Image (cartoon, one colour):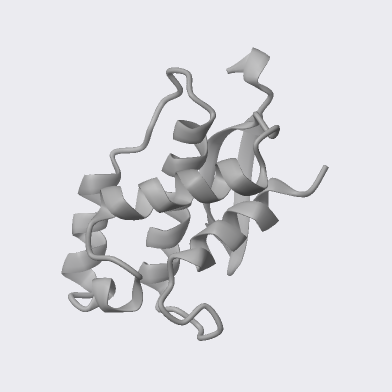
Amino acid sequence: MRKLSEIIKEMACAVLKDPDAVPSSEVAHAGLLLAHVAWNRANGGNHPQPDYAQVLRAFTQSRPDLWDELTAREPDKLIEELVRYKNDRYPDDGRVVIVCGMREEKVHIEWVEPSEA
């Protein structure tokens, strides 16, 4: 099974206007957050979701041009795109993301099997 941190990073890059460019810290974190939310939504269930709207507001305050680096300005639209991405590429992967973030510039994911969530 592929490392979930690699998959979530791949998904986060999918919503960047220029996936080959190095994103700002805020944009990188926003992409990971959106991918985290989308992953768990795609898997259904009542898994805890981070309050992404509040976190995105904080990122935008820190970096007002944050949305210029993403493929859309609406978080819900980006999440919908990422849900489709997950369902198209990883339909049978039911792992539940518990923690998603960056540690020393590396993506860090903590997850559980669906039966443990």
